[in-house]
Image 1 (spheres, rainbow, N blue to C red):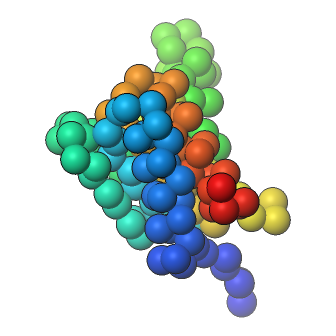
Image 2: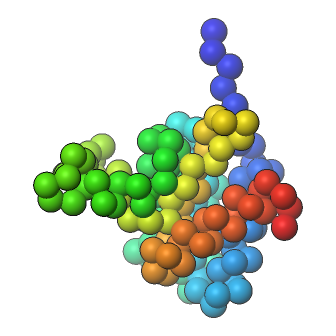
Length: 140
C-alpha cells in the first residue's frame, strides 16, 4: 500500500492567495492553477483582467510541475533544438509546458502538488508562483 501526501482545499486556496497578492503588487492580473501531486486540478482563479488564453496555460504549468516534479522553466533550455528534451513540449497531448511559471509544491521533500501562473512575462509568472509557495509555507 502507498500513502500519498496531497494538498487539501485550504492549502490550495493559500497558494492562490499568495500568488494573487503578488500579482496585485506587481499590477498584473493572473490566472492561477493548483493541482494535486498527480497534476489533477484542485483550484483555479482567473483574476479580473487575467488573459483568457492563460487559463489553459496556467493549468498545464501546474500539471507539468506536479507530474514532472520540477519547475516548467527547467524544460525551457533542455527542450530547444539539439538539446536532449527537444520536442518534449508536444508530449502528453501538448500539455507539457516548457515556459516558466509552473513550480512543484514540495513538503518534507515530497511533491504534493503544483502551482501554475500565467498572464505576465515568464519571470512575473514565476515570481507570483513562488509567492504562492512562500505564503503556503510561512503564511506571509
